[in-house]
Image (cartoon, rainbow, N blue to C red; front, side, top):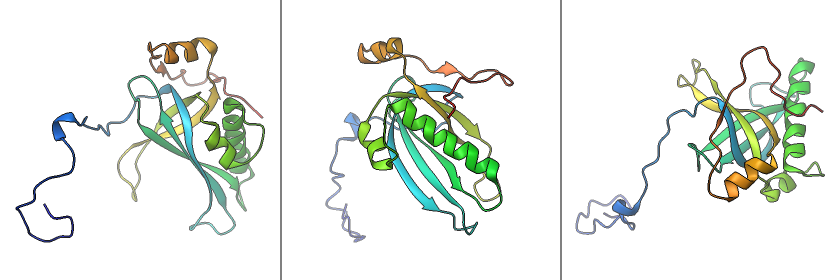
Length: 174
């Protein structure tokens, strides 16, 4: 196969062995807590809401059923009309820094730490613009010594079920 849109069918080599490649699933992960590392943290401006800014965060699950999966969350840092959104967003960002043990407030340091943490993953319902449901980051907390030992020892911790509604999840408040 030619990689420049030619119709040459003589060269059908994909450049990798399909038999040696693992298939990837994009099924939703069940709600719960997963061991992960923060692999992206980017401040952005909202295109829809002038004066609004947020941090787009990416985590990669490092153990259990979702190992290798990426999940994203957006956390509001500035909003001209919603102090509550700012309080929640900034609190989530602080929880990420605390969970990872990062003492600075630099997104670069947060990603560079590559510190295992526990991430609460939820499911957001689709909407008119994006009809499919999707996983999203709902919270962060430090990984316990037992969870870390299980992860490092190869007996990866299974995702913990989400807490029942109405109970505090125990995430760090700041």
